[in-house]
Length: 135
Image (cartoon, rainbow, N blue to C red; front, side, top):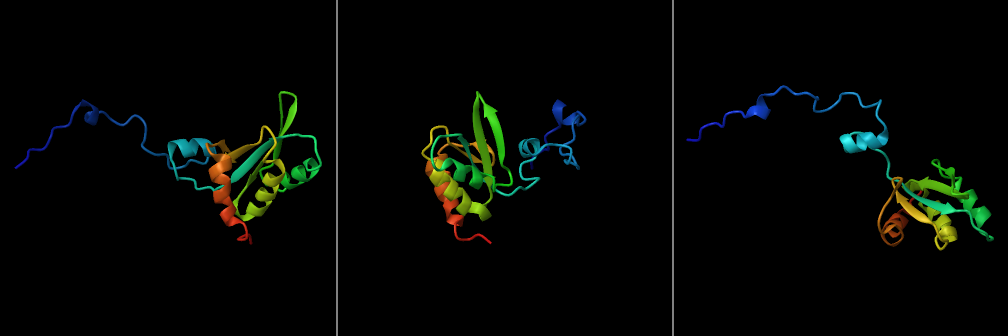
């Protein structure tokens, strides 16, 4: 028969910080993801960031990027950078945009708004599975 282990000093201390907040609406999405993973589910998105470039496809690329609900422009060191995020329902638009800007220097693939390794080689081909399944 085993004897129960007595509480140590840390077990006897009152909780200083509650284990979880009941209401997380005042926190940003990023903070909720860090503190309470999975508590506020968001749809998966994949995006591209590309710099302004000279060429015939630039106007079309900007037009496609502006179809993104999360489109924004940013001035980075004197160069205009376009950011566009797409959900799986807009996979064809993302593919068409990548066909135009994928070979341009400075193009980055972002997974849920963050840089991720193997974006061009892994994430984009996985996202192309959704092409044709748009509503």
